Image (tube, one colour):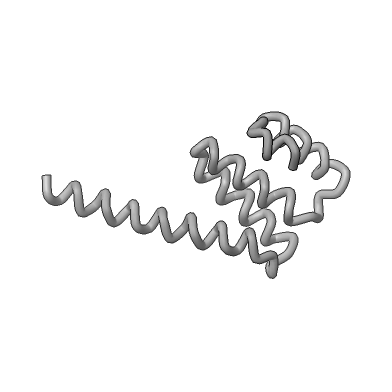
Length: 88
């Protein structure tokens, strides 16, 4: 958490991956990795991590919220792209 708060995302990711090696059943770790991937604008990888979090705990709200938010945003962007393409 300290690395994330200090915006040392690479270090944070390294620590989280080490934590997963120790205990890979915690959805929190996967959710944080998803958030870090989102910060890097790697949306597909972020979605994979959010889904991984939910595979460990389908009731884990932060991952459910992040996944729903990203899927909704992706749908909106796709509609915008289609609309923009038709008008040009």
